[in-house]
Amino acid sequence: MQTRANGKSKRFTVGHHGDIAPDQTRKDAANIIVCLKAGLPPVEQEPQPEPTVAALAERYERECVAMHCKPNTIKHYGLMLKKHILRFQFGLSDMPTVANQTVDILVKMFNMAELWEMRPPGRNPCRSVRRYKVKPHKVAVVAVMRKLIILANVLVREDREWAPSAPTPITA
Image: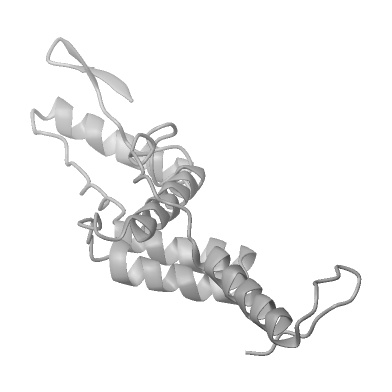
């Protein structure tokens, strides 16, 4: 809203589009004009509280994770949100994989906050966060090697050659 009072042009924000009904906006604007003409400062509305990370995390868990993820992922995200994100435990250099997963969840949360208009577009604070370099897990390789060693021991004990067409039972 723009008005002129005491020879000066003044602009005021009455509300954001869609937040306040048009009739209420007109009444608020009229009250501001009356205050200015009387020489009084306009009555400022209390600013709405900024959305918190906890509120964003709750909404993300309720509206995104619960709707689009499998049960195990829901459980994992819930744990990550409670244990690392909501407590702001970002000293995770000793757990680089967990740190990277935490950043991935935060990136998605803030992208959703932009869609839900909780944040201005293009202002994801996690966009430029550098991830830790993580070595690939060797668990699968170790398991395969154990099976190969067992198979080799079975073949040596039975004094026979390995034939790819004949499957050999692997017993632990």
